[in-house]
Length: 155
Image 1 (tube, helix red, strand yellow):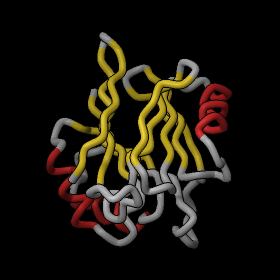
Image 2 (cartoon, one colour; image 1 turned 60 degrees about the horizontal axis):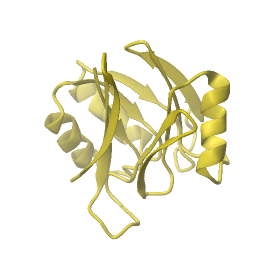
Image 3 (cartoon, helix red, strand yellow; image 1 turned 60 degrees about the vertical axis):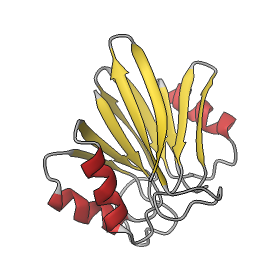
Image 4 (cartoon, helix red, strand yellow; image 1 turned 90 degrees about the vertical axis):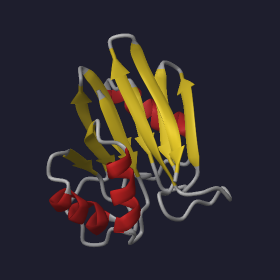
């Protein structure tokens, strides 16, 4: 099962469209905030996907949660924008409390992947405005019978 992970689009529907079109096998899309209207528009265009959305600090008046969990292909995933966490250890702690094997977060605009204390951790970076002097990026998670694989794709 392939999952597309997007964060921090900040008004760029086109970059979301590019990512969705580049990943036709990703039937689940997890959006980590800051561009909620962009992902909502994408969900109307690409209505064959399942969307999981949390709000970011720039998603004013949003009714979405600041963090959530979902089970996909038997694997629990914790996802948030930032929820006042300042470091990966706190995000991993929250994921473990919820029973998740994968922890996703956004906000920093810097892509990050690691395996920490039994939890796969990913920040896909910003799809439009990266802060790491690289191109915009998004994340991919493959959940298979053989295990979990995470990787970042640069636009």
